[in-house]
Figure 1 (cartoon, rainbow, N blue to C red):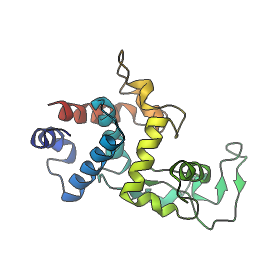
Figure 2 (tube, one colour):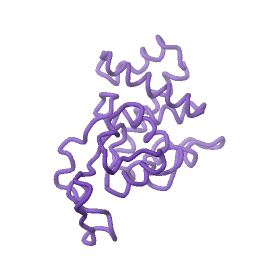
Figure 3 (cartoon, rainbow, N blue to C red):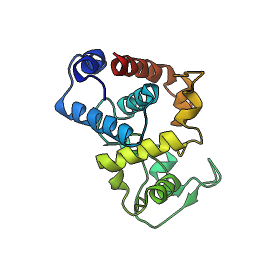
Figure 4 (cartoon, rainbow, N blue to C red):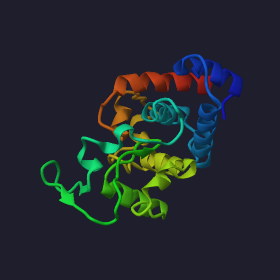
Length: 193
């Protein structure tokens, strides 16, 4: 764990100069989850924190996606299937698989696969992804094992290289990659002060 005073002094500007107790609690829960998962590379921890900062709209708490998938195929009772235009309808469970958690897990198949990895029934209970411990497990498993997109933190943070921008491919292509890279560098500076 970082020196708490120095760490929070460094990251406070990201939060507009003030962190709520809920944000601090979320950060501490994520730091504990990374430590418990054996993540010792501060670059990886920083990128995880930056991802959560972005994906939760700075709350640092698991959240429901704004709009709950409205306007997206995953916000309807559709499986990914063969891609756009080839979606497969489902009727059970009677749930929608819009983004939830620290990383906004989406799609029927992703809830199903992550549930199997974690040995919990996310298909029948997608709101479990909003529980901090489960949200953290999804976050860590997805980012360290490449469960979201097929690439993991190990690809972008090696002994020879640090790629803050392309690390976004772990979650969502290059969407907001430079912005999130900036957040990650701030978290990293705080972790290493």
